[in-house]
Length: 382
Ligand SMILES: *Cc1c(COP(=O)(O)O)cnc(C)c1O
Image (cartoon, rainbow, N blue to C red; front, side, top):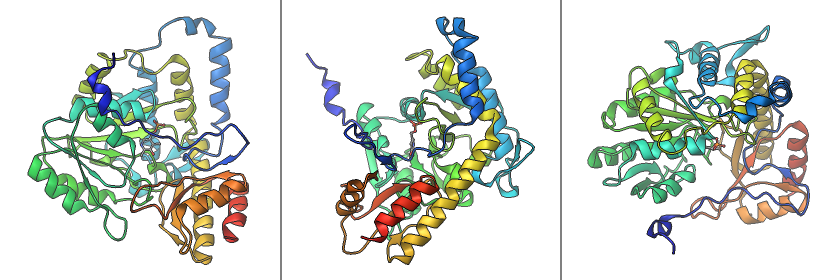
């Protein structure tokens, strides 16, 4: 009764969401702060004053939302934690300024960046050659390779946990392949500079799409959006889930040149015409209009990240200096599983990966101040 296709599926296993007890959740890189108050107001208004809209199909192409995303990127440079806010308006810091105007035709929106990534895999990657990706990166990429029967070639990270860009490039050249990675990468939290990505793009196959997943960029990486005009094969995927406190609503987007965006629309319109519902569009628009609030929460996350990193280092931990909303850390003499269990016993969930090579580490999402202090107390005693 089951299709052959089903044999290729290896579903993603998310961070646990237990029901047995109320835990502090620092295991799924969610934002500890609620959305801007204006987002809740917009939703209440949508449900009460505009409830007749719920009976109608939403704008299939999310045009107003795409316009507001473009505005937000122009105003923040795609890095919230460094953008300055004054009188409710954001402006990018000098090094994040995008040297052209991001326009709505450079944006595609979907129902979370996981769905957007699925469209990207379908639109751009072939089954006759391997996709090149790091061995340790976002674990949904291999899942989609299985789903779409795209072969993959994984490249181990270097000793210092950075991407082996030379090896990735030589494989891409040899196979005339696409490349995908997260920047900053997960679960390490390390980032390539825009300069380094530009260097990769200069050497990578020009007629194959090159995907950079910027899920965590707002917490301190360098966005590659400024490279889009120079590299027409660059596709950048971003999400509202982390820096915009939106994981429960689902919204992700692509930034790329309008031709590639059009191709993704073709796939979307052949699969699910209306991926972003009316409420998500409404809340997304309100989020973008209040980017200054999220610049504030991103700065707070960066502060807590620094404080947790310093604390763990002072207690003899090995901590990778992160540019994300999580840290990847280990302590000699303890396995990742032991750390995870000890912390869980005290009511806090963190993430441990049983994957060879990173099994000694735990990945800890940065919470608010109170959560960070509670965690320090537990980890300090291990
Ligand atoms: C969280 C995450 C995503 C998924 O984001 P959603 O928009 O919630 O689907 C994509 N890529 C990376 C690297 C992530 O960490």
